Image (cartoon, rainbow over all chains, first blue to last red; front, side, top):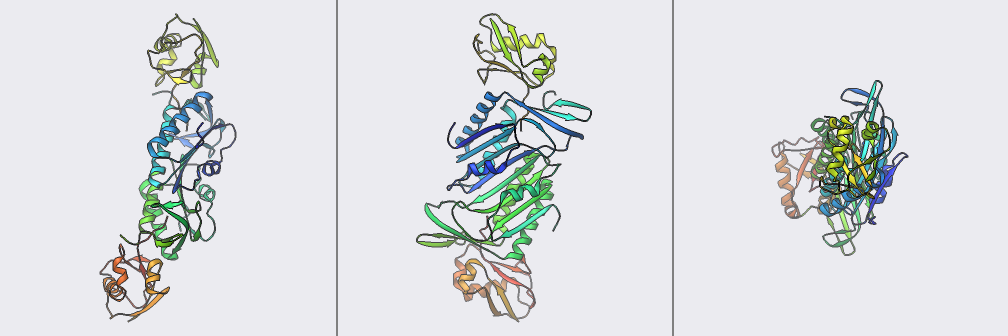
Length: 141
Length: 141
Length: 80
Length: 80
């Protein structure tokens, strides 16, 4: 893995500070951090918890590809992407993505690119568990 | 000040975690944090340090206005804006802005709006000190 | 050829295990593999999509499958 | 009327203090105040802009200045 990219899938609580610290750089003018948290409700139903699973080696590869693209497209200096696996309660942190760039606009664009692409192409699956049922998110029309 | 908005001007090092913690919310699906750091170089010159000063009561008012607009325009749940005053070395954190929203796209838009507006209309001034001189940033054409 | 196919998420629940052993004719493509699963487990037709990964990369429909490839079913992803 | 005008950043350096006492005719506007400073300190003409704040808000050119207003010179801001 490139020295300026940090990809992790973790069974333990994520710490945004780790990602921010990783991307700190004397050439950086801006750092943008996205923290994805578990909302209490989706489509009006109360969420009890989320369960994340992944195809780990492929997920890491895909995240790496996305980070490389972000470095290329947005001249990002450093990128850190951590994704949580296992069970998460409301308010828990599912994903943290931090990006540093020399100028701030690119940091917003690059961070947004990373989370948008992660949601499209990284083999991680989220099951929403409600009091009265459960669904694999995005699986059905 | 509204309960969902946290504005601070601080003479001591900023802690992005404080801002993230403030904006955490069970209704939040996404938090975006912008961390503005002091770059080693501007326009090719080595920066020794930055000096920030502000018209404090007006700066707080303007930041409050911006945060209120972001709540209105982007349905932000909570916003925390901390700006540093005094002297800062390279890598130091000048500003932290954290925004939580139910869905992630709005968090990016709202956070970017806040930093863009802060740079336009908040009475805070930054002097860049180089080995061989100093300038008040953005003062002259 | 005999293949072990890894399954995740809803694909794991549909097939009832972390992996399935299947038999495909030599020279089968990723699309053949996908058709095999759609036929054997009709529940897959209800998904938004079903993709095949070969050696940890998304495979095009015409990609040939070899017996020692690492094959996985990728139902709609939902990370983040 | 006698006014105390707060100064910051480069405006502080141009005027040589955190505040300046000036005399303006009663009924003067924010624009009159700005013109007073541009005339007295020509260095202000070199700035990208100079704004006037009245009671901690940006003032329009035609805003009248009252003797008990809190007045400040706002040179180009550069926070963040």
